[in-house]
Amino acid sequence: AVELKSTLCAVDGVQLADERYLASNVYREQITAADVIVLDASRLTECAHMAALARLEAMCSTPPRVVQPTGAGALLGLL
Figure 1 (cartoon, one colour):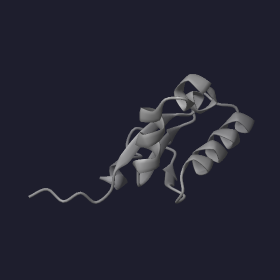
Figure 2 (tube, rainbow, N blue to C red):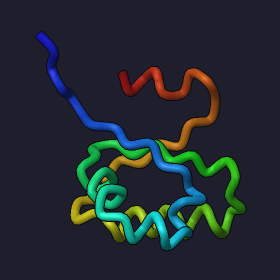
Figure 3 (cartoon, helix red, strand yellow):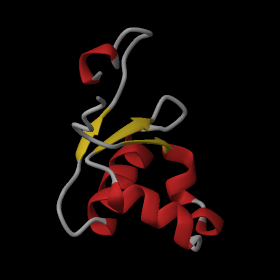
Figure 4 (tube, rainbow, N blue to C red):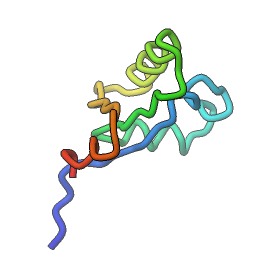
């Protein structure tokens, strides 16, 4: 049997600044349904990174757990 412990949603931080993504109901629903959000902020400046985190928090009624991978094996602890 499979036991679902949490749902993950991978988000490219650059997309959080793009109104085309934010206008998509599917995009927003995936983010708000996730227990854990894996945020790839590798292409963001520090200021844009902080803005992306603020946008994520504003989208969710319950603050999600946001994980920012730092290496290839960083996500293994979530599995």
